[in-house]
Image (cartoon, rainbow, N blue to C red; front, side, top):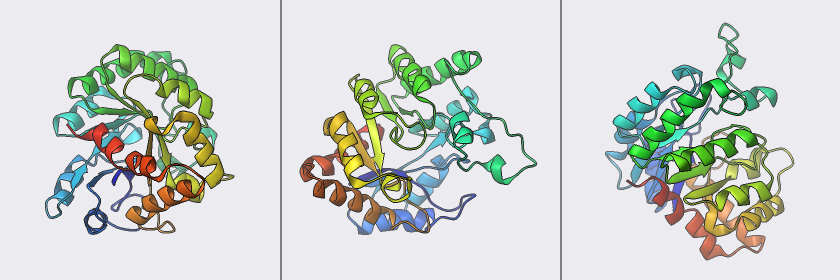
Length: 276
């Protein structure tokens, strides 16, 4: 098992465990590794430190939110040059997040600018910066993730990224509240080369109106060969990250999906997306 999406302390919101304890828990649970994600900090250095004392692979990356000026090639260059493997387009400071009244730093710090970020077709002015970021990710054969961008932006990004040589693409939990992408559209985009659709335990436990049956239907429509399962755990009221990902596999298997294929979705497929 390999968890492509986990949150740990230190963070601006409460987390169940810190980096060291999360990674130790994965090792004790027999996982091969994980990707540490933070909305407001590069996790590259944290991943390298956390991996030093455990026999698992730990990778980091950056989410392009307000702390780095949004869709900022300089932030991406610094992250990738330091060994980062994942670049997430805007998440907590995406315009979709604000429209859905979901948490962001400026939502809790009213002394900060409420500025949000977008890419084409929502914000054509960011096109060149987004293209530059795609080229940078392609140069290191890294993973480009769509973050919380809207469906039209995700379409533009996947098409543009492929044209510019990106070989690893992840639709970040497209069935979540943001972007709320229908399964048929996710399946269409995942049909392209190197593109995978993420489904998370966080959706199962915390997304309003979400059920195991709906997640199973979404996964079936996309096709398990194009699905990666992640925990997106780390919240104090979620299970430990390894247990959270195991729970997702178990729940989807009880809905009739093939357990062996599901374990690949939570293991070899996500790991292959980040291993250099």
